[in-house]
Image (cartoon, one colour):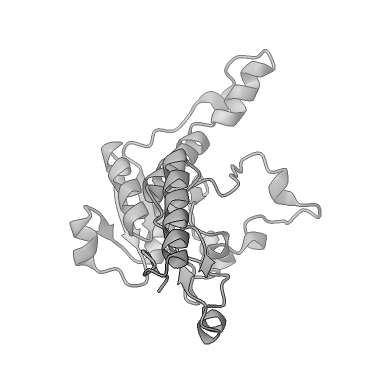
Length: 230
């Protein structure tokens, strides 16, 4: 039995296991979509409200400075790239803040966008007009490296790019120009990073643990695996 947590595994050689007759089981993701959407908004607000720099300013014994004059999100445009379950939640919160929410994905239609209370626009338009661009696509041959130099250059100079999907959606080397020699992403003051925290929450780990135990117990007892990987 090959058992992993969550519903996706892009590193697994599925066919090799199938050829050897090894069953593959996964677990429910629990409320990971909700927690990832929460992280998305934590990053959006931290970036647009300059939370890190303003905290450091106070820690240094100073008060407000010129960077303390912050933008409002209300009335600004939120561009959602990938309007799945997570993107849909992010879009709802943006609308609640009074943002103009637009969306794009490779298979998006105006009808689907309208059902999610978003406006479907071409990708270039989304990038050129959005204050906040949030990525929520699955990595595939069509989406890997989607945010390359050409598309990044389309974005507004004052825009914020948030990626709580997969790093492969962005050509990392194209994020900065000129590119410093020594690990620029570790020393960039306007960059917020997290160690893949979207699904790190107690309810999700509880769901993972239960799924692992249920699958292993069923396999040892010769019963059908509750959640076989497909």
